Length: 79
Image (cartoon, rainbow, N blue to C red; front, side):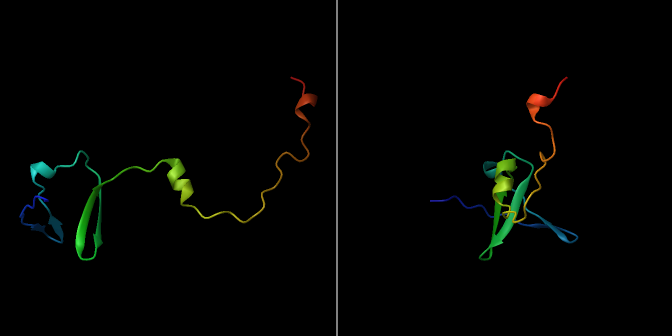
């Protein structure tokens, strides 16, 4: 069974503050908050890795130019 806590929202101008009981403290200062089916969901914010970001991108349909066209072969380059 889940423990429930009754807390009062604090109204400050247009902002509401929710005091979180110490038993439910999160080990972060950044959270994601969203509403689902009339409920507020608060989760710790986890920074996404670059691979996670890339996996959300749409495929690119354009052709990329051949950047090696017209260059000397590596064996012909003298330093």
